Structures are given as C-alpha cells and as structure tokens.
Amino acid sequence: MESKPIRILHIIGILVGGGVETVVMNYYKNIDHSKIQFDFVVHDNDKVDITDIVEKMGGKVYKIPAYYKNIFGFMHSIYNIVRENKYNIVHCHMTTLGIFSLLPSWIAGAKVRILHGHSTTVKSETKRNLMKLVLRPFSTFVANRQFACSKMAACWLFGTNKNVEIINNAIDVEKFQFNEEYRTKLREELGLENKFIIGHIGRFMYQKNHEYLIQVFQNLVHKIPSAHLVLVGDGPLRENILQKIESLGLSTRVTYLGLRKDVHKLYSLFDVFYFPSWYEGLGIVAIEAQAAKLPILMSNFVPDEAVVDGTLAKKLNITENDINLWINETERIYEYIYQKSNNLISRIGVNDIISRNGYDIHKEAKHLEELYCEYSKS
Image (cartoon, rainbow, N blue to C red; front, side, top):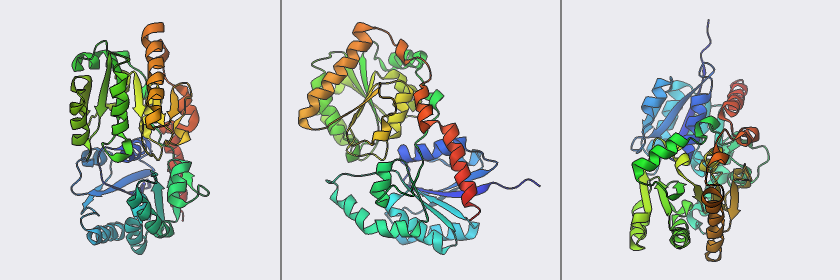
C-alpha cells in the first residue's frame, strides 16, 4: 500500500507577490510531492491568490481573517485548522508574529513548530524593533525548530545563529539565465531599444529604499543620457514614489511595470540591478540577478551571503555622500557593456557559481524534504 505524503502546514501571512512567498513556492514546486505536501494558511483579503497553483499540485489553501483585523479570530482559525486536520508539522513564516500562529498550533497538538526568519530591520524602525523585543521571546518559546534565510536574519529573530537551520533562498538557476530573445522582445514591447536599463524589483515600502534609488538615478541621467529606470512591484508607497518621479521631471525616463508574472525574463532586459535596501533577510532578487549574470549594486545592509558571484555583485553605502560612488560604479558597468565590448557575450550561459554556493532549488528542496521527514518521526 502506497504511503501518503507528510502534510506540512505553511503559514505565510500577507500575500503581496513578495520575496517570502516566492521562496516558499519555489520549494513547493520542486519538492517531491509523493513524500511531502504543502498546505497553506493565507488571509482572506490578500491581493495575490495562490489557490489554483496549490490545488493543481495537490495542496490545500485555507483562507482566514487577517491577523491585523482580528487577531483572536486569526488564532482561533489556526487552532481549528491544525486540530481538525491533525497537522503534526507547522511551518510559520511570520517572524516575530509567529507567536500568534504557533501558540494555537501547539495547543491544537502540532508537535513540530518551525519559526522561519526571512528579514531583519534597522535602528530607525523603532516600532518594528520594539515589537521584536517584546514578541521574540514568546515566538521563540513556542517554536521548537528555528529556520532562517541567512545568519543575519537568524541573529535578528533568534538573537543567535547557533542551532538555526539556514534554508537558502534557492531558485531554479537555469530559468533565470540570460536570454537574448527575451531581451530583444521586451525592449521592443516597451520601446526601450538602445537604452541603458537600470532595473529594480521589489515591494514599494520603506525597506526597499526607492527614495535613494530615485536620487541616484536623477544624478545618473546627466552622465548617461540613454539611462532608463524600470520599476517592478507594488506596495503602500507606490503612488508616493511615482509622484516623486513626476515632480522631478523623470517620467519619460522611468517605466513602471507593476506586478509581473514573467519576472525571470526581466533580468535579461536589465543592464544593471539596483538594490539599495535599508535591510534584507537575504533578498532573493539578488540571487536571481546574479543567476542571470546581471551586475548588481546593493546596499551594505544586505547580508554578505547575497554576494554569491563577486564579479557581478558589489556592496555600497547608501548615504548622500555615496551617490557619486553608485554613479561611478554604474558608469563602469555601462562602459564595459556598450563602449569596450559592445556585446553581451559574458552574460550567456548558466551561472554555475550560484548552484555551487547552495542556491540551486533542486538540491535545496531535497535538503528541506529530508528535514521534514526527520521531523515527522518526532
């Protein structure tokens, strides 16, 4: 008789088309479904709906009241789902808010409760840091397994990276490799032929530091007349950022694409990727960019693990005094691509460095599968 797969309940929180759900879905799509099956708890008012994708792969999606609208309704729903479906393993991706998922899971009988850290913060985010200090001991107490996407994320959430399982933000490396056909077609569609394109993919929120990105770009256009900025994503600060672009007279030099389902193709469109975040757990877009052999300039607040290919990635400070450094590095990349070599030969082919450093989803999904199988014996 064929044994049933071990069912893991994943609690993601808000679905916004961001990095956390991308990471989780990457693992779900590549794990052996005959051994492991994922089910999901999401908010009933999320902008992004994963139901069709999940159900086609044999999983379930439970839509419950958002925690920020009704925390007790949220916790009661988690309790009922875990108890009625007898989940033994609950994997929570809500960082410091994990207490609100893992406590009812514990009471409902889940023996293995995983808290997964995906982020960090900065000193200026007082509210978030205060919440971390208050909730962290409770969240870590109810969790008996600790995961994180980087050592920095582990230290931020758990206070240490000891005894924390690092689960890399792995990707399908081949899917993201440079494709000249994608590049040509997208540039034609967007009317961006002969442009030097700076790309950014990320949620429009304080963390991603669009303000600094726009500031650098505003100065860059005087040095590189063909420079054009492409922004991808959505979020609470979208209108503010787009209004700022208009007020600076940059509207004709910036293209906003919103949320896209063909993100893997966009890295072939770009010539350089800007990643000036105030903080990151890791930043899966940084891994994706390097898989496409795309030069990337990132802030010093991004964890060191995000620099996988040192020939492509460079970390820079993000102060007013460093704007010229961002411009100088961008000019160097521009000259290499368009003035010295005038070709993109260096970007062709799979970037094996990504796979060798633990970011190949096929290998990493196997590792996570083994952990779940081990935990199921608890």
